[in-house]
Image 1 (tube, rainbow, N blue to C red):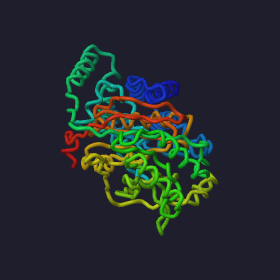
Image 2 (image 1 turned 180 degrees about the vertical axis):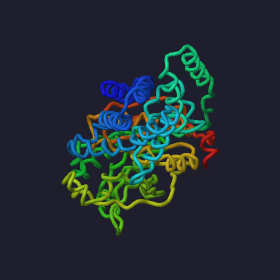
Image 3 (image 1 turned 90 degrees about the vertical axis):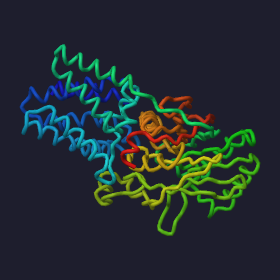
Image 4 (image 1 turned 30 degrees about the vertical axis):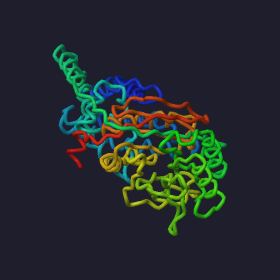
Length: 438
């Protein structure tokens, strides 16, 4: 069991906040080698999965307590059980690695739409093999990482030679081509009066923070101003003062605002990205399609409320069912809202039907944890996977401009009020993985 603990510790250190990519290779190599030399592969597989996920996801329990965090980690660990089972049946590490990849894809989609936050590829944003995602997607990058781990389970000269050859091949992969044109944006990280689960209790104050921070923007300098998710938690259609403030702001700046808005539908609240014109009128509205389970809606509500009484306070949001992009400076810009960034099909759908992306997210619920840094790493991988420039804007950080090869061009700090300006370069190029699956 000591080896399993060591393997999980190393693999978890490849994720942010440590983010040393090659430790995932070493961690999974030790894990796979341990399967070969012990007599309880199922137990050790589940233990590895639980320790790895509980370390990487410990931020999920900061404000809701240990029980939901441990329950999430336990659920994730069950997807490692078939890895040990297949080894016990076949005594083959190759089949075990294949099962690990299969289960990684499965848990990214099931249950409740999936939760693939700790997929192996999401620890590899600094790996020289990152361009693989533009060819084979997240699955291919996870597979490459596991292949290197498999080779390192046996200390042989030919295995080390194969590892070297594979990395040389990865280094020879082409980068995504740059597009043409520019979209000048400024993201407003307005901060919140407080963090944690209760930040929304002062929704008007959050709106006013973003409004006041935006007043410092020089008029007609940008093609659009971007506010994060939950910047406007008071439906402007129902509150004339908020609607007037938005109109006055866009008129004075002569610039559209793309804002994260919670609006009220007859069936319940909706998490939306709304583009307000220079006159303050809504021009385009995207309703979040990939809702966050246990955050924006509660599956298995009775059981969930037993695990955490806080589940009682969650009003189920209503999901959208249409892709909507915003037209900025004559280009199509696809909005993705927070949790949606881990949903492969949804991100691909938005990226292939737009020329640049904006990510509107709210990290106030997990402020002071590695959650924001981990999400930034995932966003960088998506930029390379789909060859799209991205502006990611958060209420409290991290906000960043990212190029279409996953490089961070500029970024903010965390838990501060600041703005970030830059240029998105529109791109119509379709990566190999998008041509294959679109």
